[in-house]
Image (tube, rainbow, N blue to C red; front, side, top):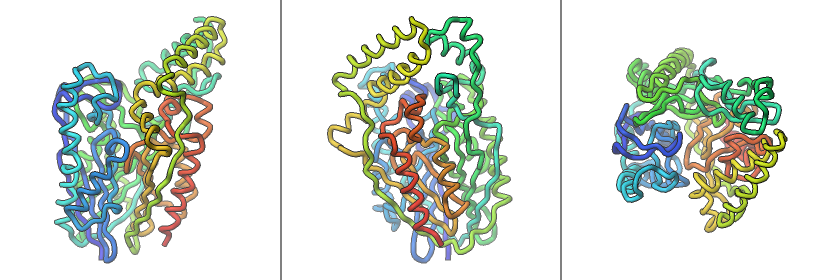
Length: 470
């Protein structure tokens, strides 16, 4: 017999806390609350907890284990059966006072950040404790639908390779023209250069795991969609479009709606950048919620919803970087080479050096807190987790994952009911296909694992999914 319940707990941080995402910004108010939403499922042999957090990351590095320990100490759920994910809102708080050069004193940063981060595992576990205490007999179903027109692949192909567009749609053409100028193109050359279009792959599938009580009343809805949560911008704390999606679904159904981020590391919303009212997040969340309701209506019962859990621990190789103590000198030398190529109009060479500089600048800035871990960790420890509910399989990745990876896994898996959940059980930045290291772009700059890692994790995840075959 299957039992289930869901609950949510407010985890909104204090006003004034710095943001994680969109640069070194500081919050000035709260637009909408952030929540920890949890779903507990139990059959005769196994019990699992699935957690979705309105945060940019599930917790830094491998601190998700603190959430697991809290849940295990307060319930009868084993720690290894807890899945901790984040919606990836870019209007949520940071976890570190030093990861960015925030425009406020370090002491004040720590006064705001550290107590909130320290309290988070306990506060998150409250939602699991509540759900676990209210289990009722339940049934599950799975549905999906397609949603096109909300997002695009931001890796734009130009003659010289790939450039990543991370701004709003209003500056698309000017962004690309100006990029050519920044590489040394003459104004007439920039005007004549063909403008790349967003014709890269996306995953338009909106996947839904629906959980009802035996009378058909919705208890929980787990949503999976592959797109960056970047439509929100400005000085206010917000759960962004995933938060609005959950809000509208909850209003329509009465269920707790857990939003999970699919493989959309290089996919972003078509949006206009709003500075305060988050109108675009509202619009996108409203549209996406209608697709969720459609998928719920289409959902078919999961036969024999037996719960199974499997995991695989991997030791990943670090990407090669110069010694951090010498990286300033390397950057200075690369900049000279870039300036020379630019001055001589060697656009192709300038683009290649530009990509190399982005990798070095990221290592010397935002990624430095990650890279100092190399001094104590020869390898990066990551966990891939799979949870089977009948022929539905949730598979996790502790990265922002390029869409091609998710599409490959869905295509090769034994079931067509795969739910890839990224930014789950830790965060070790981007996971990109081998070819993206050569093409450059934002995702390449913020990828800290060695080439070939994505291919390794694809095979490992497929093995896990296969191990849960019924």
